[in-house]
Image (cartoon, rainbow, N blue to C red; front, side):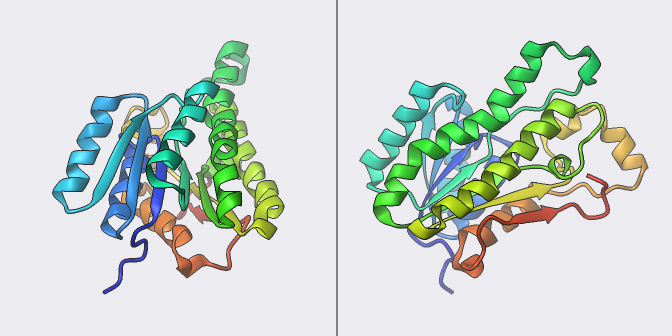
Length: 244
């Protein structure tokens, strides 16, 4: 059976754990050459080893996607090595739970930089190559909190809502150039960050759905493949029975 992403070059930020790792593993299973991006090279190497042990292809690039120069170097390294980029997954981000009344402005800015500005930086760095190719597929990872703000996570909710708006506006801008941009907005996902979340017990007691990373990875696979060829500027929601 033909693999859905055979030979595609896929760059995945925040690939060392959680959703990013799940997407990288899934894409490699479907034949993509995965470029794993994150700040911790040793953690990326572990994911790379898992992918290669399963017969997949992966490389690693250590980069902080909030730093302009490192993002520029990242894009340059990928294009130099592979000559193109087919799929970009903007997944890297942070979450800090704190009522806005108690949140220092510096923390608010940190969340905006990590969750929204980084998506803009990485996208802008790779867009010129996609324009030259007349092809590209950008998939951003948002959140259910982007669609209905989550109390205690105001900054996070706003940052992810920004990612949704960026997706919709940019998708319309680059559609004539052969580039697609979509966003996935999942509810709670069983990651290391969720296990540490103050809202974990509340969500579980309320009977809310908690998704596996594989569920999000399957959504990303759909958007990355030709199965979703007609989709652009769209929100793929994976919220189950959750309010966010």
